[in-house]
Length: 149
Image 1 (cartoon, rainbow, N blue to C red):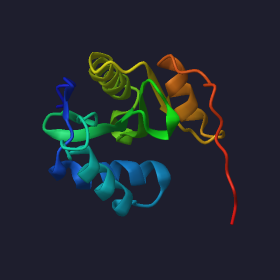
Image 2 (tube, one colour; image 1 turned 135 degrees about the horizontal axis):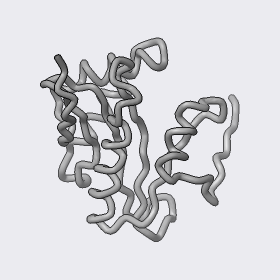
Image 3 (cartoon, helix red, strand yellow; image 1 turned 120 degrees about the vertical axis):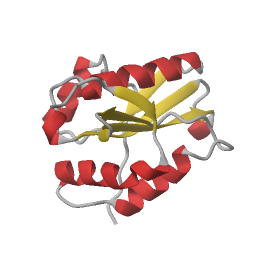
Image 4 (cartoon, helix red, strand yellow; image 1 turned 135 degrees about the vertical axis):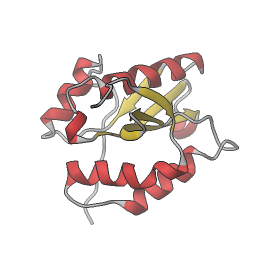
């Protein structure tokens, strides 16, 4: 029986397989290259503080949140962070895992002096938009520009 106690911790290299599996359940195909780069970057303490977290229940990684802290890149003067990926295993959705990860990330970033957290969501991903809305996110002042080649 699952204890349902959520342990939140810094993401580790050995979480790679679980993260790729969780993500592929949502998007339909694995993205190992993306997550290999994200985890390597997340664990590079020389570049920045580690903001990415894993949620563990009964020793199993059941969710993750990955982001980066920006200190002036892209002409943004304030400390800003972005959330690049969030995922929860389908068997553990709607049990507070993603909210716990989000609150942990907010706490870490606030202690680091971050003033704004941003993310990108596909306009038709209503489940993800609803999640971010429930966490207090609102449309920001920046716009995304695209150019199709």
